[in-house]
Length: 196
Length: 366
Image 1 (tube, rainbow over the protein chains, first blue to last red):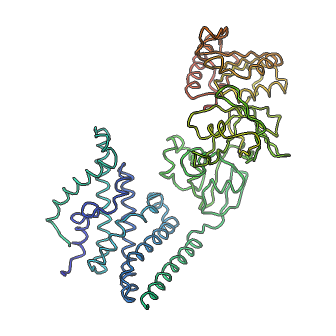
Image 2 (tube, each protein chain N blue to C red):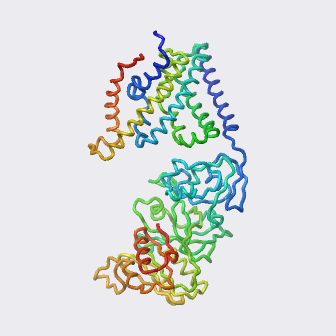
C-alpha cells in the first residue's frame, strides 16, 4: 500500500470520496434536516466536530486495546458504544465549558450518535489501515465533505420550494434523485485525487 | 473458549468503564451546584442547577401554563428572564415574536438553569395549583355543548377571579396516546371555592373535547390546574359593561354575572350572545333570572342562521352586526369579549371604530 499524504486524504475525503456522494452514508439526517441552510450548516459543524474526536478516540481504542487483545472483530460493537458514549460526554463538556458552541449546535449534537457516517469513518480507517495522522485528516475531511453536501442540498431545496414536483416525488423522493445527480457531478472530481 | 472469555470480559469492562465515566461526568461536569432563583425581585429560592426552568419551577410548586408538558411544542410556558438564562435557543424561536425576543421572553421548558437566574412572572401564578377533582355531574346544554361540575377534595379551595380559566388534563384513552392540557374558562361564581363549572363544546377530533363528551361520566376523577388568565372582571365602576360571547364563550361571562349578582354590583350591563339557531341557545332561564335580579342587565341573543319555521322574534345576524346597531356612543363603556379569534378580531375592530378605548376592551380568544 502506498503511503498517502494526510493532506491528500483530507481533500479526497471532501471531494472524491465524499461520505454522502460516494458512499451514501449519513443519509437519514442528510435527507430530513436539509431544508434550511443555517440548520444544515449547524448540523454539518456538529458532525465535523464529533467525527474529529470520535476518529481519534476510536483509533486509539482500536490500536491500543482491540489489536493487542486480538479482538479486531469486535470493532463494530466497540465503535458504536464508544461513539454513543463519546457524544454524551462531549455534549456535557461542550454545554459546560463552551456554552456558545453548545447553543449553536443545539439539538443536533445528541442526534449525531445515530449518523452512520461517523461509524463509517471509523471503520474505513481500520479497513484502509490508516496511520494516526491519516485517520485524523480523513475524519476532519469527511466531516467537511458531509457539511458541504448537506449545505449544497439545502441550497438546492430552497430553490425547489416553488418548483412543481410530481406528487409522489415530493419530499424525500426528489431529495434522493437530486442526491444521485449531485453524486454524478461529484464523480467529475475523481480525476483530481483518488484514495482507494 | 478463551476467545469467548476475553470477548465477554473486554466488552463488559469497556461498557462498564464508559458507564462509570458517564456517571462521573454527570456528577462533575453535569453538576451545576445549587443556584439562586429570584422571582419578581422579592422571592428567592435555592435550587439544583442543570434542569429546565419549567421543571424547577414546578418543583417549587409554581405552575407556568404549559400544554405540552415541556416538550417545546405548545409555546405556552413563556416567562421573562432578566438575568442568567443563556441565549435564546433555536428550539424556542418558532414560538417567540421579535418583540418577545427583545424583551427577554423565553420558553421556560427550553431554558436551562445553570447559574443564578432572575425571572419575572405574573404575580397571579403563585396562586396556581394542581387539583384532583371529581365529576359531580355532566349534562347536555345543547346537542354539542355540555356543562360539567368538578368538585374539589373536601377542604380544598380554588381562588379565582371571575373570567379566569383552568387547564384540564385529558388523559390517555382509546384513540389518544398522549396526555394533553386544554384551557377552559370557569363558569361558576368565584364565591364557590370548592367546585368549578365548565362549559365545553364538542370539536370533532378534538382530544380533550372528545374525552369530555364521549368518555367522561359522573364520579370520574379529573386533574386540573389553575387559575390562569388576565381576562377577568374589572372594577371600573362608572363604566357601562358590554359583554360579548359566542357559543361556549358564555362561560367566563357567566362567572362575571354571578359575581356581580352576589356582590350586588350596580352597573349597567348588556350581554350580546351569538349563536346559529334557537337550538344553540342555552341557560336561558339563568339569563332571565339575571335580568330580574341584576341592577340593570339585558340578555341580547342573536341568531345568524335563523329560518322562518323557528318563529324567532329576537335579533338576527352575527354579534358584530347587532353591536353595530346597539352601540351609539363610546363614552363610559368597557367591553368583555370571549369567543373565537375571528369573532374577537372583528368585534375589537368594530368597538375601536366606535371610539371605545383599547384599554377598556378585554378579551379571551380560544
